[in-house]
Length: 329
Image (tube, one colour):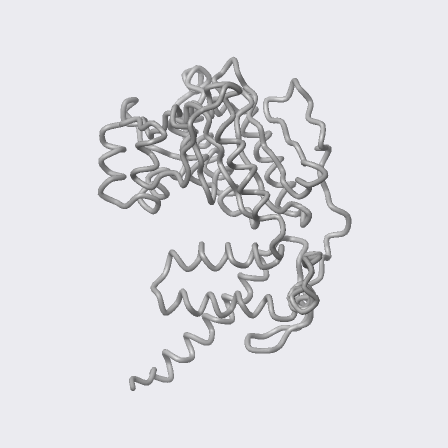
């Protein structure tokens, strides 16, 4: 049996310690775990952020907002819907919309009551048409790079949200719109939806993560083909290549994908909140490394669930043959 050299073993141990620290940090700004050091049994997870902050957002969204943030209630409590509502610009990513998205996502990071986030459109037939090209045409060339960096940063923030995220694509998702969807954990679409990274038609390339996330979603060769050709796929074609997880026939209300996303989010609600966050971390980080390192990431992440009150509640509920009552602790 092969034995790791002392230097390699030390590097692995140090790497695991870093993974544990990363796991704690990724749980969210308000989480801390008592104790320190890899390999030590740690105290229970504690929410240290005080009352949930919604930064002015409520279950009732303002109709004039370009981004409507809804915290659903009753049986859907824990689901947050970000609804893009910029009809006159086909939901294109303007400076104002990016600012609103940034603020909303920043608030969600630190809200432990949020269990799943759905990104959808409030505008029939449109998910997001990409960058606001009319606004872009008025920018000086020196402004373009920094603004694209802001778009990329917001999309990265969405990708790094600790809770599950679902993109409900009920219409056109082009360029930055598809990049926004690619940042979500799960994508569902209506069969009539249209999706594509079409930037090469404008003599540029995808700048919101598309050159990186599309190959990871559907494979390098096919991603290159789609980007090189600026091809647009419908829902059925997108499902066939693995770009989306579910495709639905559009309904009369034009929200078939959103309804499916809501069904998925409801499936997630009963599960342990800490486990959901840590599972997402283990999968995301593990996909970027080799299998051996990925298994070490899984081990470090699993360790974070052992001392939680939720794990004990799950065992007790199983013993008592009742639904568990998880508190995210």
